[in-house]
Length: 199
Length: 348
Image (tube, rainbow over all chains, first blue to last red; front, side, top):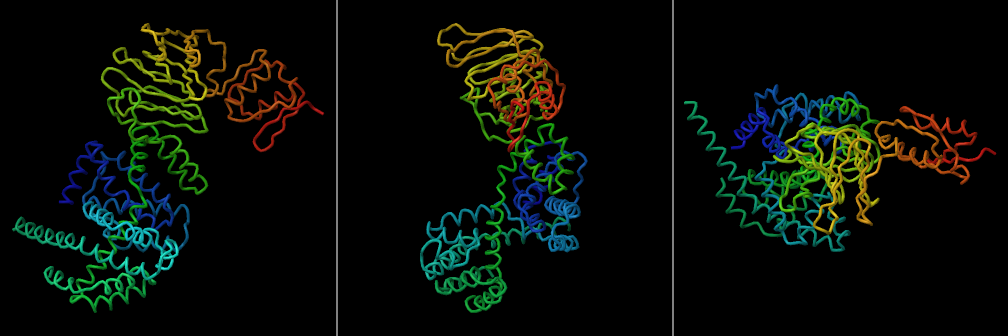
């Protein structure tokens, strides 16, 4: 499963395996950037910080010591980089406040990170929407447009937007429903194994 | 639980999905959260199912959020950084970044210095080799170390492509622009440079290659060692090649397809790298040509008569303003700067 995967990749990374490093990078880069930009309100800066962090991880790989999950280590590390950045730059108080508050809580990685399989599944589902519906859905979710704005952009009625968005949601629900069930089953199975191992 | 999900799902008609989508996607988020809860209550039998749906919509939105950070290009940057000596300069870059003014500069530096070119094929069309690219846009850059220890200094508008790892028998790279190489000696693995339509083969030496695509010629000037230059333009079976020793200059002219050896007459051929300029009774026109190349500026002579003035001087790494001041006083002329362009005029 995912957790052991990361652990293995981490051990290989420590030995200087660049492929393992690349796999971890590809897996977590976007999520880290999304996470960092919540604090910095600056996408470019977020990317710079995350790239710096990964370069540093590579350089320090020999002395790296991750005892908890790799994912959590990455998220904490990005948060710390953001904290340092903010101390230097005095970014708007509001964002500094966000980081400080996040620093006192556990990081909810689910809010930022999508499992690779789920991400692919979502991509596939969206891609398989009929073209018009896909465009409407994309304008809403990717561009953040309101229904009225979508109608104006595409020169269609708001009614059409409403209907198409409803159908898109229904379709995605159907497509992705199995996935959450599937994950849950796996989770249960894992728990059982875990117990039997302990016992 | 999953069974009950499936059952109720079939009863939800499209109108309800429309309402649900609208409450999630079109309203003010806080109102929407409340409203969607009530819609969910109406159409789903279990609250859990509604929660799952909301979670799914959040995951889809997260998918779009993450798309804003394309991983491919970023990996290229990080890969270049972990492969080159630049990474030892990280501390500098990082401290620069902490000052917002320098942040832009640092970003430009990183992107200007190292770009990943994806997959490039240049010397073996049958094999696809992952290539790295060193790029210089408008500044002369520091010296880089290639995987074999060879040092390369790039002039402006220059690209050097090199593999992450050199092959077993040769070390091959390609260049567009102008660069100075100090090749790490290795008799068993010749160093081969593909420069436009010329091929340059060396075994441990230092020399300068100039092959800007727009100039339609390739120049090789040797400082130490021995260099073989080969034309890839010959139509006859006989290969067209030259052996160059220190002080020699090899020139391949595309138009005439000629490869020629001459003695390098230009003491300033490496001034773009060293900023050391030597002028011995050099015409002002030529002096200005050198200054433009070394300092990346535009200098105009307002009066053609000025062209023929002769200058004898040596400048060891001086700023442009100082050199222009010397020219000004030597010839009793006037230097004006307008929008980054310099004009040399007779004093009125």
